[in-house]
Length: 466
Image (cartoon, rainbow, N blue to C red; front, side):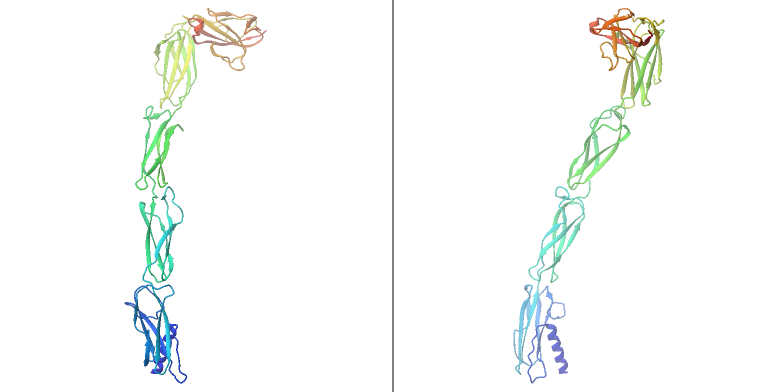
């Protein structure tokens, strides 16, 4: 039985690490000393751990018939120790003179580590705010057992102007401390986007000129930073999309689109012409599919204040009757589309029961012709222009088109003009050589110095053969 106790004591001494045995040459029993440590609610152990609460140190020796002991009293350690531990020594001397002295370092750390700070994986996304998940790596220190490690935490919500991310650090003894790090977090774009236009629609729900839109929105976390202000000027169409955006102080952006009707292009009104008849005029024009209304107003060229609106027409032709022969009439066309865009055109005509145009359009002549046309009532004079080609000029006040050769400009008071084989114009002597000629006539009213002309009466041609 005694031999078994001795073997157990020697084993405990080896486990206790640091026990020294002194044996007498004549003794067959080894003297041993070893410690045990215990904390509340836990079984005794070999004192090699770190303790986070008060620990009771108790010494044991074998054999039990010791004469004296030193430092072997039961002790309770509560204060934190350095990382190397606090040494405790027990010395036992037996009656046979054997002496064993054992030193044991006890490790106590009851204080959690200090969480010093946290490092984000990146800086704020916009103006001190984060708008998508960010990782924080925590750092700390521990004065006793030393730092074992700290956590890395990813924050991804909820949105808040007073958000906190919580991380921890652990020491070697197992103590844990936490710390809250504040941050500004908003990952939600602005809401309730709306737009106010600078004016109502121009015509029947349509805009026909650039219009400004000011967008508004709300943001309940970081607050609104700004919204779009844009001037819309195309593309054109029904229900075209207008898109604006709002951004918050965290850098989140939301956009909103809505449709408007926009058309800034007037309908087509081309090839407008008026041909004379006996006390009538036939009007022709070429419109476009987007025309919804056409207004034609007739007036006398010599007096624009007297006007008469003709019946609305969307066709490509109209015959106006009940006119006076020899009077120059002016027809003003106004074609409108659904957006209120209007195209304008003007045509002039002089009704005649017996057209007097000579020579006939395109007729060949072998000698200088007598130019004749229908007289215009109230006309004070006429302006006749002759060109070498068929480039149409304006009235006498206009410059001829590039490349056309103007040969003559005269102001007869009667509706006729005799051409000659040669004449002077622009400081040069000109001749009526064989070739193609075009001539034009406008009616003038009042004094020539006022240059008040009506519409074009003649646009005709002849060919000189020799």
